Structures are given as structure tokens and as C-alpha cells.
Length: 386
Ligand code: SF4
Ligand code: SF4
Image 1 (cartoon, rainbow, N blue to C red):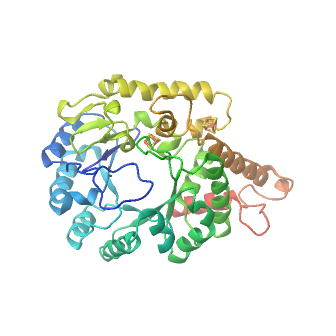
Image 2 (cartoon, helix red, strand yellow; image 1 turned 180 degrees about the vertical axis):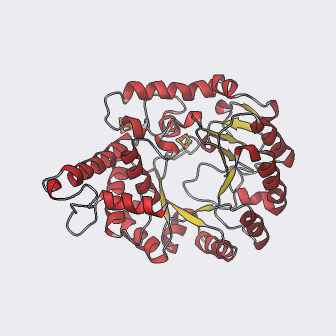
Image 3 (tube, rainbow, N blue to C red; image 1 turned 90 degrees about the horizontal axis):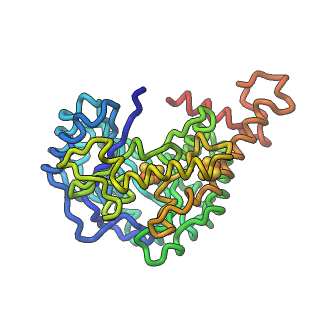
């Protein structure tokens, strides 16, 4: 069976912003050359037959400039047309110009950007002026018909303001994806911003309720993905599948890594695009083997967990980051995943098989908690929207 795969291109690790908790930018990072993009095309041409998604990530990918995208996008789209590639970009939008927006619009590149809530709160953790610069770029994106969704990073301090943050996203009609701030492999003070797993669990329950309570106006992608995963019994985002068989990242110099989170870290280099490595060669590299070992670890540690098929032990980077690179267990956010999966399952069971189940069809979307719609109502919204 064909399964889509994902290659993240990191045109540079440089970034003009100085977010307090950032772990993925590097000063003085080079910018990917068009020659490297050509090597990417040659490498991926015969790499596998599945549908390909290419995400431009960073650092800040727009630092590569209009000239880069004017050449890179047609090279990738034409050279890899056999794989029917789709594109996406993760950017803070600061360097979006009408010229770049036009190029991206021609290739229907959806943009994911980052905003942590209202201006004051956002700028307190992402730096003064961040909010305005992102909103400036956002307007350019809208003017060119580009689709933008926002990732909101919840940190240990900002989670105290979760009501205010959700109200902000609702008031602006922004689609929201959330990230817990992670303990970084590169940070000198990882605990200051990182969201503890228990608090992440609380946050997910809170966001599930917010999604249901404001079903018509609030779109929280992570909650949708969690519900979908439980319903179809298979993860629908990289955190909840065996990502090592479907995701790679290419750094500015053409080196290949398991994912953008590892880019720039010598120990996680799997190969180089110039050498056109096969899947087997990447899997057999020391970094590839370490990621494969994660699968075995998940089977051991999560063997007795009823959520194992649609959780798959969470993200390997999260498991490695707090242990200075060594693989001691599965994703420490397990506590949070278990909590939200337990809650979704409990509510679903209640809706489908609860005391009044005999009186209604399983698709009657109830019972409700108070006046709040149930999980099935959210699922119906997700399916209908598709
Ligand atoms: S390492 Fe984590 S973030 Fe990267 S692809 Fe895997 S699950 Fe996703
Ligand atoms: S919830 Fe925890 S124990 Fe269960 S599969 Fe996920 S990581 Fe493993």
C-alpha cells in the first residue's frame, strides 16, 4: 500500500526573531543553494513512489528570499511531478513580500505561522515587535489568497493565561494548532519555558472542552487530530505514527536528518542528498538505527497501553531531548497523551453505549455534558469540513 511521505527542506537555520524558548535557529547559518535543491530532486526522483509533501521549515525559510523560491519551486514541482508533490511552509511571516507571496500562491503553498496569543503576551515570550511584524506579513498573505493557520506555543508561564489565549484566537477567527514548549537539546535553561507533561494534559482537556463548547467558531487542529486518531484507530500526525519511516529533513548544506528538529546536530546526520542514499541506507545509518530502536522501545514500554495503535509512543525527539541524546524511554508527554486519549475514549463510550444509547442512534451526537456537544459532533464537523 502506498503511504504519503514528508520531506522538510530547511533553507537556513537563521532567523530574524529571538523567541525566548526557541531551539531551532542558529546565527550565521548558510542558505541552501539551488544546486542543493537540484540534488534533492535527483535524490527523491527514484527514492520511493508515494505521494510527497515538501515543507519549507527553518530557522526562518523566507530568509532564503524570492530568488530561491522562484527557482526552487518549479524545479521541485516539475522534477518530482511523478510523486505529485504538495508544498507547505512554516514561517513567522516577517519577510513575506508581495513578490514572494505571488510565487507561493502560484504553487498553492499553505502557510503555518506562530503566534502565542494577544500582542503583549506573545511579545513577552517571542520578543518585542514580533506580533506586529507577523500581522504585517499575514495581511500580505491574505491579499494574495494564501491560507494561513497559526501554531500557538504554550509555555510554562503562558499556560496560566489559556482562557485569554483561546479567546484571542476565537475573536480573530484564526485556526489554531498548539505546541507545548519543549525542553531543548540545545538550551542552557530548558526547564524555564518547557511545559510540564501534567500541565500539558490539563491543557489538552481544557482545549477539548473549548473545541466542543465553541464548535462553530473554534478550530483546534490538535484536538481534531486526537479525536480522529481514536476514531479511525490510527494516528493522523507525525507524533502519533512511526514517523521514522515517513519523514526526513534536509539541512541548508544538503545533509539529511530524521526530522527538522534534529537539523544541525552532527550525531543525527543520516546521509547527504549528493550521494542519493536509498531508504535502506538511511535506515541503516546510526541515526536511522537509533530511530528504528525507538519503535522497539515503544513496543516494549507501551505494550500494555490501550492507546498504543494511535499513539505509537509520541515523538522520538521529545524522548531523546531530556536525556542528552540517549534513548531512555518513550515521549515524556505520555502522561498528557494518556490523559486526553482516556478522556476522548470515555466520552465516546458514554455517547455510544451510555445509559440512553438504546433510545437513539449512535449518530445522534449525544449525550452532552451539560449543553456541550459531544465527541461525535466534533467528528461530524471534521468529516463534513473535508
Ligand atoms: S521526530 Fe517528532 S516532530 Fe519529528 S517527525 Fe517524528 S514525531 Fe514529528
Ligand atoms: S499513551 Fe503513553 S503508554 Fe500509551 S502508547 Fe502513548 S506513550 Fe505509550
